[in-house]
Image (tube, rainbow, N blue to C red; front, side, top):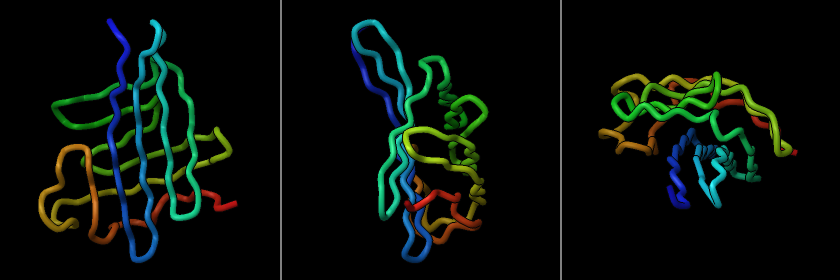
Length: 121
């Protein structure tokens, strides 16, 4: 198998706060690695993860990073690395978002739960 990148973009907004999460799997020169990019209004973080830590369930559109998950139902994260500690859960209920989210993207609308905690400094 050749080199590749596979990633998904999740964007959450609540009033003037934005959180973007980009879980990804990459293969370069025969080595597979995974990562999670965390982007806030103030900073961006890159958390490298082991190559076998990411599982993508296409049928239910759920990405698992070890014990962490991101998908249409929301996110549940408890990770530390790359100068960032992110923990929390955000549940998405049907009807909470205007329109039907496109696969891989959750954007606009009000978050039905508190944003996950990420240090700003």
